Amino acid sequence: MGASRDLEEISDYFLEQSIEAGDRFVEAFNKKCRYLIRFPYLGRSYAQFSPDLRGISLMGYIIFYRVLEDSLNSEEMRDRVEFI
Image 1 (cartoon, rainbow, N blue to C red):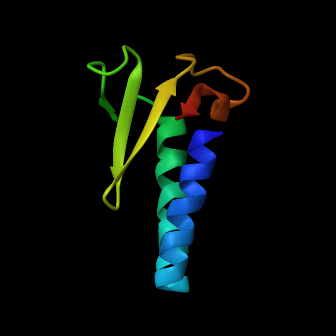
Image 2 (spheres, rainbow, N blue to C red):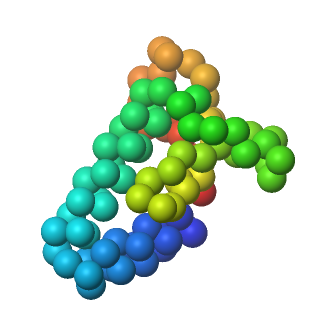
């Protein structure tokens, strides 16, 4: 639940600045997540904090995640990545 709450707080912050900024952030976040689902090892390793922790930057923030499944034959590709 932490990742969802963090995303909501960040989105709210951008929306308070302007609707366009909020929309840009949400769109960029969703686009980045789609890339990560297709290319889970795209992000940088943060193994110094946790062995399987990875992250990728977005507008001054870091999206932390773990790769759950390394199979390209998965029926549900979105289940390959867990956002922290």
